[in-house]
View 1 (cartoon, one colour):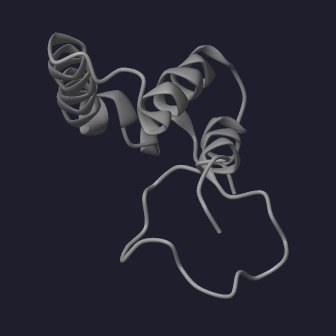
View 2: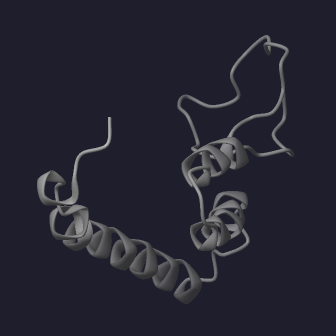
Length: 95
């Protein structure tokens, strides 16, 4: 149900400062990574690829980013190659 304009929350007022801070965090992270010549890491490469989704319009941004960072395989692996999740899919990981 869509509320009339006078009853709608001002989403920009509620969320802009938080979104701004997150964007600055990402920019600072990328600056540090580049300063230390670590931009060849598959996770950083994937992050750069996914940032282009922010320019897309519509309601699919989050879905496209999640899919883009996820492991596309459907078969389970016998043993994990790390202790924790990496946050992005490494197609060169030794299985």
